[in-house]
Length: 216
Image (cartoon, rainbow, N blue to C red; front, side, top):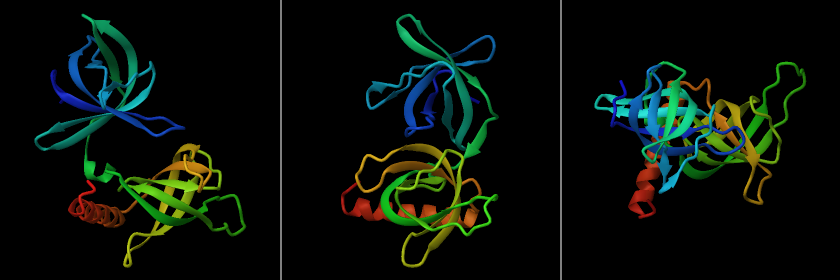
């Protein structure tokens, strides 16, 4: 489905830091079926993809947006152009990009750590959401969690919508603000369509408010 000359978006997933995205163009295909793209760029700066790096590739057709997982095989030069070969590691899937748009917003969050082995009632921990999308949120807290930990989050989007949702820690880092110690990436692996739609509707409404005020 991807064609030579087509523009693609590449997201580099990093365990301990925020993901990095860049834009590139399909240049060629290898004899073994690997995708060859120009070195992705974001904000005028190249994204230096290392060998074996795990990435996601997004591309667009008239009928929608598509994505697949990939792994960087090699970085090389051809006629002074920086190129990257990518092996496709998943099937191509059609997605709703609106699920991934992140709104920067501060929301108080209360959560518990889910532990099947513990018979004690889990304590309620406080934190703060700093951005949210239909697929996850960014959580600041003083409670140290490990990648892969499951939590149950409770937060309020507005005066009408109280959200209770299961989250999975997919990224861990140190917060860059003094309010909390840790900065966590949380995905929603078991979100219902109803809850996702509620979150996305809230995000779009906030976008409209910010646009009217001239902030975006």
